[in-house]
Structures are given as C-alpha cells and as structure tokens.
Image 1: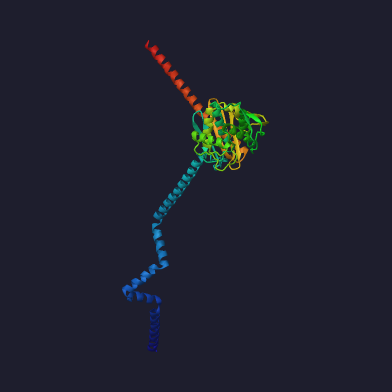
Image 2: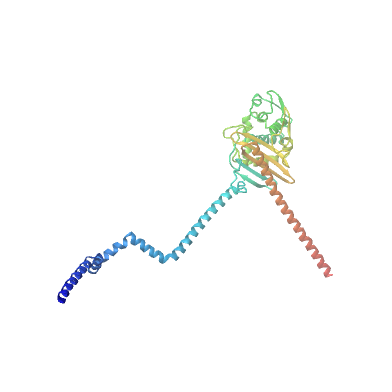
Length: 393
C-alpha cells in the first residue's frame, strides 16, 4: 500500500512539473528574453534605434537632459530675457527722445502729463532784431498765403519812393472806380473822390483797406499790375526767396504766397528803412478819416511795448499777424501764420512775445550778475594792492 501511494504521488508531481514548465515556456516575458538572447546583434540594434526615435523616447531623453542641464540653461535663459528687455527699452527711449527733440525744435511739445501738444498755427517765427537772434520758430519756411500782410510790402515800396522824394505824403490821389469797388476790408472810398496819400497809407495800416491799397498803387505806378512788379522786385532785393505776390492787398490769388521767415525779414528791413512808419501809421489806435474804426491789431495796448504791425486773413491761410514790440533797448518781431481763429492768433502772438522777452530778461540778468561779480573782483584787487603798498612803506 505504501508503494502504491508513492507511485501515485510521483505521477502527480511529474504532471504538475510538466504543466509549470509549459506555462513558463509560453510566457511573453520569457519570450522577449529569449528573443534578445537568440536574435542577431544587428536586429537588436535596429530595434533599439527605432525605439530611440519614438516620441516617447525623445520626450524622455529631453526630460532627462533638461534635468541634467537645468541650472545652466535657466541661467542663460534669464540673461537672454534681460538683454532682450533692455534692448527693447533702449529702443523705446531713443524713439521717444527723437520725437520730443523734433517737436521741441519747433514748438513746446509737452505739458504736465508729458503728452505732445499740437501747435495751433501753420507757422511762426520770433526774432530779436536788436541782437539779430531767432528766439523761436515753427515751419518758418512753409509757404502760406500772406493775406493782408501783403500791404506791409505795398507800404514799403511807397515809402521808399517818398524817401527818395519821388512822392509826397501830402499828394492828393484820385480814387478810381476799380479802387472804390475792391472787395474785402474797406475804408469806404468813393470813386472820383480825392484823398491824400498819407490817409491812404493810414487806411491800409489801421483798418486794412483794400480800396486804399489799390488807389495808392495806381497813383504810384499807373496800374496795380505795374505796382505788383515793383513789389516782387523789392521782395527779391530783400532776400524773400519763397515769396510771390500777385496783387497789392492780399486778397486770394493763385500762386500768391510767402513764409514766416520771409515776412519777418521784410518787417525787419521795413522798420530799419522807415522807423517813423510805426508812429505815423501802424500804432494809431483809430482811423479818423472816412470812417472811425479801431486798429485791427489785437495786441496794441494789451501787451507792454507792442506798437504794430499788421493783421491778415483769407480762407486758404487762416488768421495771420505780424507784431512788433520794443522794451527798453530790445526790439522784437513775431510772425504768426494760419491760426484757426482770431483768438488763437492773439494768444499765440502774445505767448511768443512773452517767452522771447523772458529769454532776453534772463540773458540781461546773467550779464548784470557777471558785471557785479567782476566789479567786486576789481575792488578786492584794488584793496589788496593798496594794502601791499602801505606794507611796503
């Protein structure tokens, strides 16, 4: 009985061992191991190469490499980011500085908020005639229709002839139908009436009479067209390179133009040649013949030292103004072209004069301080010399 049990147990154990061996043989893990052991070396290398190129493998490799190089890579990335930000900041600063410089050379380009302030006129220029210095300008060479500022040149040509004794201010001028019928600003002249040349010039200067300009031009040159030729000849002689005149009064005319710089040059020459013109014509508060009207210049009596000179307006240019002023020993001229309204024209002209005189006052104060300092040094030197002389005795 013991022998039979042993035989049965042995058979069962052998069967269990066979089953176990079969399961191990069919296992995928043992198969992969067997393949790796039995496959050729080239096949194994090909399989490994394909696995390395897979997305998962690349991500795993990159992650592993990133972990190894993290400190250096992060440091370089931070430095590059800082350099890029600095370069962008510098470029922005250079752009802003350039923009402010361009605006600042022409006008005050900033307010308390730092935003650009648009210049409300087409052009302007201010000059210290006494010291031959430009105090400020904006678009000074931009061509603009001069409007009634033209009459300053008309008066310039006439007064030249009076100065040469070819004419007299007391000459009586007969008003033609063409002159009496001229539109725009008027002194209410009547055809056939006789008016002195002096009063015609006053009418041009005080109330900008277009009829007075035509009547005076016809008297001087025989016709308006002939007088315009004299005007352009005079403008060329003065160096008004960008100016062309088509009539004597400044009413709209194709091709008629001037610039702030040219008009400033004309005004300076006009005052130098005919200094009495301001008192005789331009600074008069009222016109007292034909009509009684106040001077059209808005700054006369409003700003200290203002004594002229001329207003102008046509639709193509806007509101124009030449202003002359004198304080102590300094004579200023400002020209404003193309203001959108009378109020803006007056404000800009007043601002230009005030700023120019502030600059003049600052320079004079600096010179006075330097003179006092030098005087103090001279006194100290004289005292030191006197002391040395007494010590020598």
